Image (tube, rainbow, N blue to C red):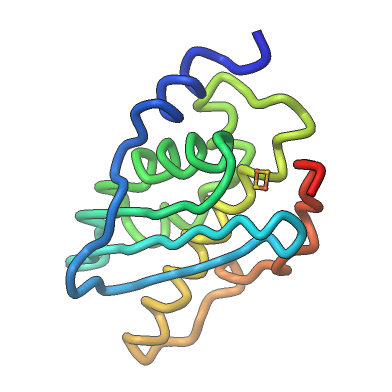
Length: 144
Ligand code: FES
């Protein structure tokens, strides 16, 4: 089986899909090669992510990793969420095929982009950990 049961479960029943009205932060990232797009909405109270929703225009692995990533950061502090890596998300899904690992980068980047937005809205300097090189790390292998 190419995909783990967890990947299939999160792909077929993605958690936290949608939008948040009046979010405290929004992040959108895209993969320039395949055109996949991910948008992440956060509701943050006292530095804790109390709600998170996402929308993905992308492949199954992008959907499954976003779904798992939202589950992993919900209820966590902003600082904890910043530590989340795409490798940790993939591990929580019991792995992804190597050529789909780049898809998981979208989820990490969308969270970081949203957190950067949060810091900016607070008038605070954006931490280094929010930064990423858009589009460079994840040359899409989807064949497009
Ligand atoms: Fe483009 Fe998965 S993110 S194929």
